[in-house]
Length: 274
Image 1 (cartoon, rainbow, N blue to C red):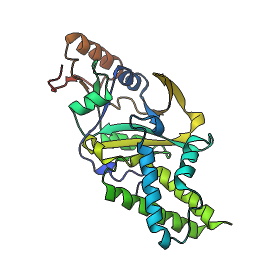
Image 2 (cartoon, rainbow, N blue to C red):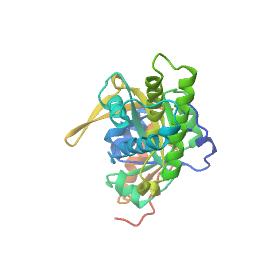
Image 3 (tube, one colour):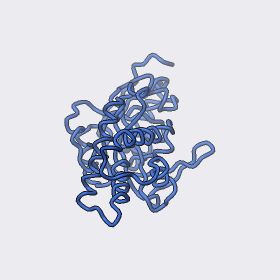
């Protein structure tokens, strides 16, 4: 079960986590010791949240005869409203990592290759930072269909248990609200199996829109949330393909000497892509 402010899986992770970004992303983390998490509906794959919606609707239908309480309104419509249309409700904001280091697929998809940068993070330090915030969670992404369905079944059963303890005047409505809240915790960690080669981990932040900001990208405004981290949160920097020139390296060295003094020598990518 994925629960906010508890980090059972990352504490056992022995390897580092990597974040692929462009020049602006690196500069923002280095200068301000903060990460920018993007609203789940504005990620590269805009369908992933709706994948989770469809899955929980399917699971609910199959479990309906065994359930003591019923979700009284359409799950997809209700949860979409919960996230998109009510400004007072909580949203989900995402910051992504990968277990894959110096990976060509990640370079191409998540950096601008002019060059891009692969930033290394220590999971233990990340866990310490995340535990300071009770509205923030870090965990691995679920790609396997059976694992996804098992987690969704768990939150449905959990919603019934919570409703039993405090049924309210209209137990079915109470169950629906409990289910929505649990769903918002698991949905950001469900992703289509075609992305499983990314081996993604995510920081997920639930917060009110009043606490977020907007940045422009192309023809749209992208909602994002800034999360303060400790200084020197980045352990290492790898300069992406196309950035092996001395001029690029000198600029990164200068950045490190100014803002990331723990990084002695940034590395160049070993990927033969120019």
